[in-house]
Image (tube, rainbow, N blue to C red; front, side, top):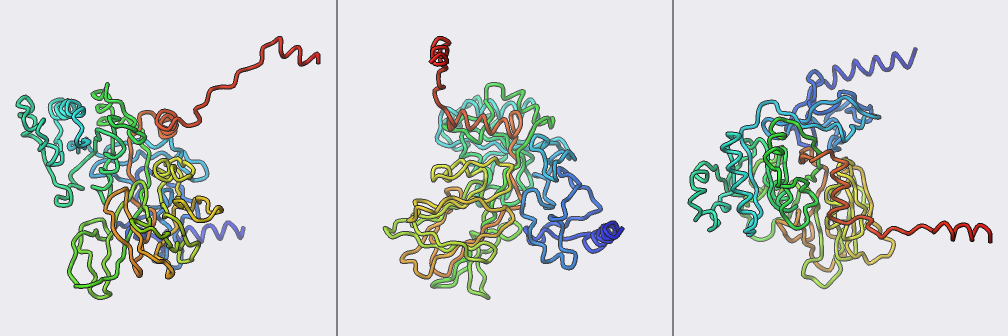
Length: 448
């Protein structure tokens, strides 16, 4: 009886005190309410994922992909189809299905640059989207500046209908319903960098060299694109990292406009009051901190939720998502983790210690990386291989799991596609099979 009364009291407190709270991982950008159903997520919630009853402001652990983060829509019209089939409050990966609130009307086509073999597939795809599906097609302006496209008169009628944009100048985040990538894994990483907030569903065609993240074959693109537009597709939610770089101002204090605000929008990167410059990035694969051009070992301190856990002495350290576990981290000796596992990986690069092995930490933690006071040189940081910059004493890098995952459309389902990529792209566990004994040999051994 006492336990039942406690449960009833808790339910009342949850409905009154936590009727609406802000996702602290997004710093109050979204408000979530118990009275409204959450698309794409089961309504059942574990007590460990509930906000503190006394103070919802202190509730921070919403960054885990399986936590109560309210962000379940991807772009203006897409969301994950709600499916209550869960086991111990963990969603079955095979149940993640794409659905549309409204029919998609705009698509962003990303093509691998400097690859002449992709010109014909690009033309065929764009023509099909415009003429057969009556869609608005966005492309980057420099794609149309390719001489092979600019000089193609037969493509002129289609080319005039394109909507163009320029990276770092035009914000198209609220105008794209879904994304189609033509090329290798780099096109998917580039698509992720264009959307610092909610990401529309991404359909990636394998037309590059590796293609671990690009499961679709271009041979039957018409039927595959039609299935996605109709909402008949599985998706895997690839968690991203929210990275905040804070630098001390050195020299002349000038405003720098290359950062991103806490809500993912573009904002000035200078804080005149505290003398700090802050920049924010959304990272799909990994954050790499290395020694750069210096011949000395890198020497950086790694904090987890405010506690110093280790000092990395070596060539550097990789902080990666499960998606990034099959990239640089795998080459550095880390385990490969399925994208549906909510986790962050910490992998040293050539550590000066035989006992420093890669580790996996929960997705909800907050990591902070700084130069050690004893460091002889600076360090360098890059985000998915881009935006490389120097880190000096007094600077810091804070890393958490973003509440804006990248919804990647699957050919079959998240599990089957992942193992298919392991086998086809990385040749995982490929070995000539051991031969069996002949029957006569077995009989002789048995008599002996």
